[in-house]
Length: 193
Image (cartoon, rainbow, N blue to C red; front, side, top):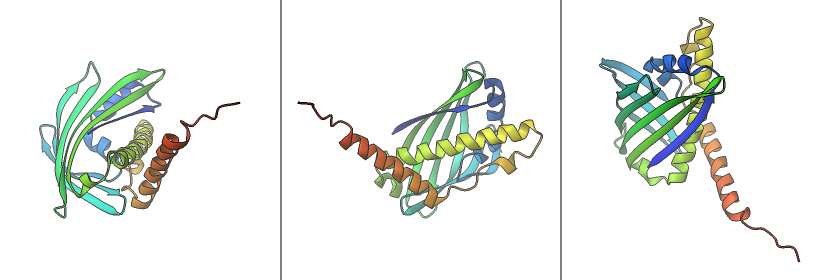
């Protein structure tokens, strides 16, 4: 399943790209993500925990940067992992592309996601909504972390907290309800007689 998100960061593209060069700092901005081991050669071990409805999923696995294109400001990460309780597996190729957007930066993120087990039971809409919420939080955390680094403060202090299951689920549910509302009520256009 291919999921695409875009967000803006109010920092110049070169500064955002420089920040993207420090993968542990970038990972700390994504709620529920923790890098546990730097394996060298742009490879890492870590965990990702996220709540999908009533189920909390925690994956442990590896991620490797397979492409880092300075000129195109493009970064590709290949990640895979298994759910801690043996309820499935996930594999994902994430492509992040940075482009100039006025004085700031537009970050485009494409995630080619393959799920099996418990996580695969959720529909594309729910997975897409949760991903969109996580990307919004990631963008806010990223902006705070870059601002903190500019001020000489610890970037980890501005990093993400673990993904809150209730808040994340509530925000994803609101997005799903809005989608249903648009699908069923907005196409109706009363005709005037």
